[in-house]
Amino acid sequence: MGTRNPEVDAWLDRYDNPMKAAVQRTREILLAADPRVDETIKWSTPTFTHKGNLVSFQPRAKQFVSLLFHTGASIPGKHPLLEGGGDTARYARLDDLEAVERARPQLEAIVHAWCDAKDEGG
Image 1 (cartoon, rainbow, N blue to C red):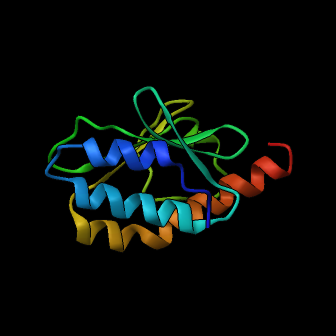
Image 2 (cartoon, helix red, strand yellow):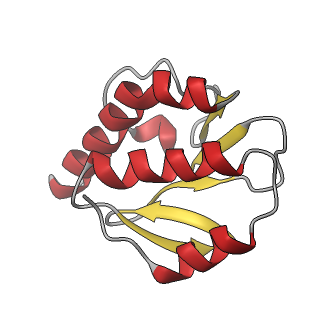
């Protein structure tokens, strides 16, 4: 499991959003996916990192969990969860807590692919 950050705990305590439970569960999945993952607060939102910024919550979304994979286009492998066609960022939208649970295997695969690529110098 990745390292929990008390700053993120405090951010979530203050987070007033109908998607809070789904955001909290997504956080748990991302941290549990790989022990190399850390979390911090960047850009006023929880951001998950390993040798660079992997993913941040888009905290203003109120009808779904919105994730920004900062350099998602460079994550090795095929990840159908990730949307977007630009050269850099990718996005994921999880409509509710059930969607978060369904996305768990894909989120775990994305985190592993990112950490492995970063450890290989990517």
